[in-house]
Length: 193
Image (cartoon, rainbow, N blue to C red; front, side, top):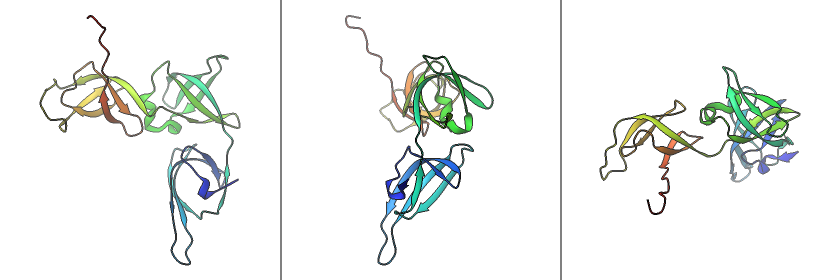
């Protein structure tokens, strides 16, 4: 058991029989006779639904002891994504609702941590940034403006906004959580070339 004041992003807790992932926390001090409050944003790990909740800082919650294993992403179907343990070759399926929109950034052969509670996968820890190739966009324009954007389709089918200088076939870094363009991946040129 922990207090609400000890909640941190990434933790798993059980509230009223449901398992939640803590996405955000913010402590607000109370004034006068009012006590403080801990505002949280939670995601139900079974249904994928979000819940904004408030707790008293001293309110006790059940934190869950999760086990983490690195697993290789294999493929997905309409409802699940499939992962394999690299040593035992055991396969597990994780509901696409657990992964959310970030599932689109998984690429075959990628190794990611999968968290288990009571032998059941409850969360996949995806990287903050993914490198993905642009498959379709308008021809590049090299102007002095970095604040003008155009639409681009990535190899995973996701559409994002990129600067005008990005061309088809280039690798870009994208923030997985928001799906926003971060930067172009510059490949090092070989010396002497």
